[in-house]
Amino acid sequence: MSEIIDNEAFFKQMKDLLGEEYDEYISALSSERTRGVRANTLKISPEELSEKIPVGAKIPFEKNGFFIDGIKLGNSPYHHAGLFYLQEPSAMLPVAAIAPYLKGKILDLCAAPGGKSTQILNYMQDGSELICNEVVEARANILASNLERMGAACTVISMSPSSLENKYPEYFDAIVVDAPCSGEGMFRKEETAVRDWNLANVKTCAARQYEILKSAEKMLKPDGYIVYSTCTLNKVENEEVILKFLDEFPYMQPVEPDENVRKCTRRGFGLSETMRIFPHTFNGEGHFACLMKKHAETDTVKIKFLNPFSPIKAEKNEIERILRDMDVDLQMQDLGIFGDNVYIRPSDTGIPQGVRIFRGGLPIIQLKNGRGEPLHGLATYLKKGRCNKTVSFPAESKEIDAYLKGEAIQCDAPFGGYGVIAVDGYPLGLVKSNNGILKNHYPKGLRKR
Ligand code: SAM
Image (tube, rainbow, N blue to C red; front, side, top):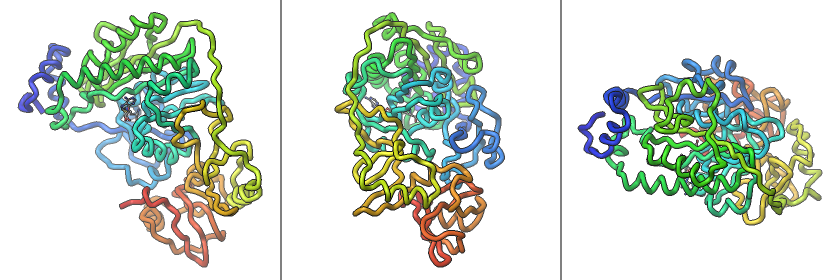
């Protein structure tokens, strides 16, 4: 890609920004896109994952991440089993920067499709709670599905930052603001995106980013941390947003992240604590991140929380029967009923009045007329070897392929009724065993096409 693409204004911006490095940047745009994976440590260690899929070198700032070359892994049974998340390597930078501070109440404010949220899950300290927000409802659906695949019970909400800010005054210990942006960092090989780039859009994005960041500040506790990030390269959406923000909120101060995060990134332009990755300086796409701490003392505002779940009463016996039958170790206090479903509740705090819940946790059982049926989330919640009613097949087997396509499988399973089908022991989904046939319960929307 070069100036042959008709967008003089964009290339001029990059030349002004990069000076002598401009030519290197231009040649990097013509090279292959880099890809990455991150082990989901709720299910597998990075070492074990590297024995299952062909990974390349480790990503220097993300202990669970690897570069991958060329291979497509979206249809791998291990991907369906939630053992890893496919994520562009540079996109792992912001969470790596805030990782040491991921404890207590955590908010991912612009969360879909879930790259940062699923990364946060692997760093959160015990007893922490992650709330994932995505304003666009169709995207909140993808986010909820990715969290379910990872086996995570988190609350997914769908609110604009401006309507959320008053619901959670100074509540969160850590907030990730991965803001919508003009996407210049992803321009490698995307000629249409380059062609469509214009300065007016950059300015619109910057104005929106500033408003989102201000909402985040309102929700951050004193001594809490925010990481702001974009996948764009210009100063307007990056340093200029941060400088204006620091000016308006002088108690917010930039923080230098750990050395292993810093060493792969470039210092910001005129704001040395910020970090940038350019496609020509790292084996990844472009990204920007800035970690900040709130040095303020304020009065804690009391929030009135409501419990969105109905208490478990008459349903208790049926729920216990299914958990016993499926050999799942969950206590009633971990669960709640919302609509027809039983959920693993992320915490017992509840949700402030007026917050729109998209998904209140991990749905594991559906109740209908007093009878319960296990849901896919129950299988994703289970760890390897944690359910006696499991039938396991190798990744390359015809049985796993048939399962992922939604087909029934011939198999004399050592159990009747509901059970789990696993790939190399890692739970993949539910089956119902009867007379040598495993009926397929893999959700239609997840099946291989
Ligand atoms: N953090 C995500 C991840 O790592 O997978 C990617 C987030 S993406 C860069 C930005 C998200 O912000 C999109 O999902 C988009 O729908 C959402 N968004 C768009 N407009 C928004 C707004 N005005 N306020 C908050 N979020 C917005």
